[in-house]
Figure 1: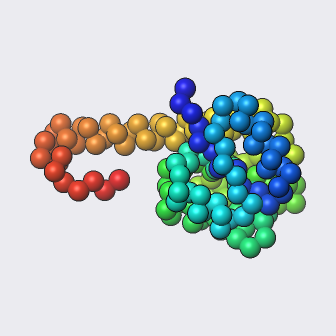
Figure 2 (figure 1 turned 90 degrees about the vertical axis):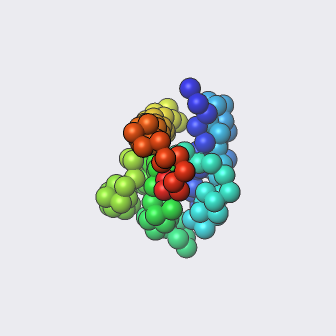
Length: 150
């Protein structure tokens, strides 16, 4: 299996540190951000497959970060991280295209299962795009010289 490049976004630093250690032990390459602005900056700088994104954060909240990620990185899958009080925000995130959500606190195995499912979905979408490009080139060989739109 390919390495999953994960971005974990939460304003609680202790949660970030602990969760990153647990995910790193499971061969998940994990970057962390304590706010939405840093998360978007990291997305520009490195490859990210899946984002675990806290709904409630000061400044740019998780739903707004999700909106921005969806516009710029449509294939990146996002798992919303929510407490009981913000389930409505997680549901809003699902409507905006989040893959799923997990309730905080959650068992690391539950989070890991969602991360792996989200990664599988992203890989499947990327594979469909690759196949479509190959089929286009086979049916129209001159398409190799056309500007790629994806």
